[in-house]
Length: 317
Image 1 (cartoon, rainbow, N blue to C red):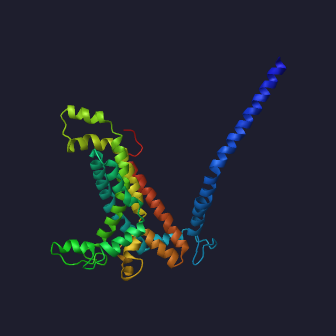
Image 2: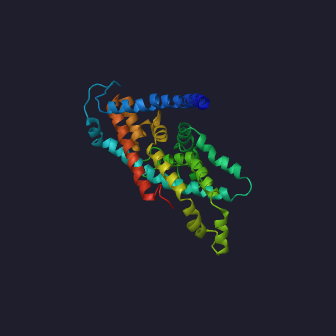
Image 3: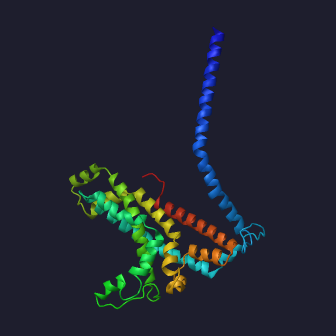
């Protein structure tokens, strides 16, 4: 009897071992491509880029002549790089609160629509699928081209205002209007969808209880019920929007730079990625270029951490 039990236990152990090996093989079959992709296309470039940032990599991407933190010190004392950081801060001060207000307002309006909600949701979200490069060229060539027949100048001409060189005017800096509106149009639909999902998660019973208590359906409900219920959604939108603002490149490069008559306008508002792009690819100074990329990454991380701490990200309600 004992021999039979031992034999059954051995068979059970072998079957369990085979199932375990099959599960392990299946796991690695699914995970291995992702791990290999992350290693080859993310981890190795990050490590290689960090080593380049510690090297004198002029006209080469080979690691060799190590100079320590000299590239970081040069950039942190580089007036143009510091100015680019200030430029992206100004851009974030414009685009982050504006995107928050507009996307939340659209979400509130769409959420109150009884019929046709999928239509309006799709219409507002469609710009998010448009390429930043294409949208930037439309803003530059068609809407704000500075010519009398441009769309913006046609609109203001109806009010008796003459044509404005939107991109090249320094005083007042009308190019900020072009840059901010382009980014706003491109991303507001995406954040509207996030807010709309948050609004639909709020229990209707909360609003019904407020109505029974005599609360107005206007500002009082928005302030005391809707916004507190959207706290985590708002924090997520602000954090994502801030990170995206610090990574601005396409609209600045294609509206103020690129080619043609406006190529010299890049210096008017040049965020860090545009400056580092020119430093690394035009000047072939890959050491300083990668050092600037790591400085920007650390800055984004620090600002995001501070903002998350101020807004209470991750804390219980």
